[in-house]
Image (cartoon, rainbow, N blue to C red; front, side, top):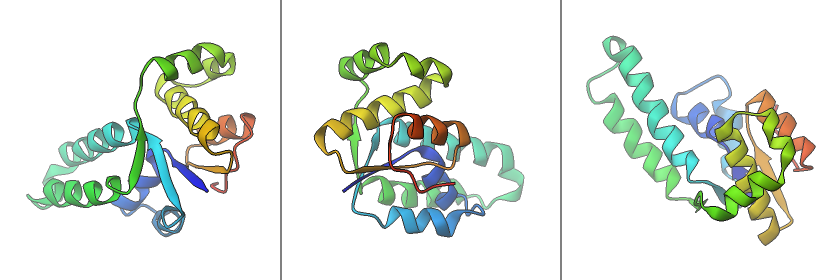
Length: 142
């Protein structure tokens, strides 16, 4: 089984959010996949958190979080954003109902589903969850 992760799940782990334990349980699933956006959005999210809370955090907070993030990301098989993803977005008109980066996540998951029909989509984002359900992905989050 493939497990597709959007950024909200990994950020819950890295930022010790309320849903951290639930996110960690999901992360323990079988083969982890995502768009390369997972890496980009997580990197930016950690940097933004540090910049906005620098006065509350230790000086080496970002270095430590980046190390942990990279350990998690090393466990993920990534789909690059390329012409295949662009064609999928052009084909899937329903993606107009979401933000651009969310559309890339869904299009990437659709491409992974071509490889392996047995895929589950993990997200804590309400609109992403609804869209994943629209595209008939198994989803346990929320």
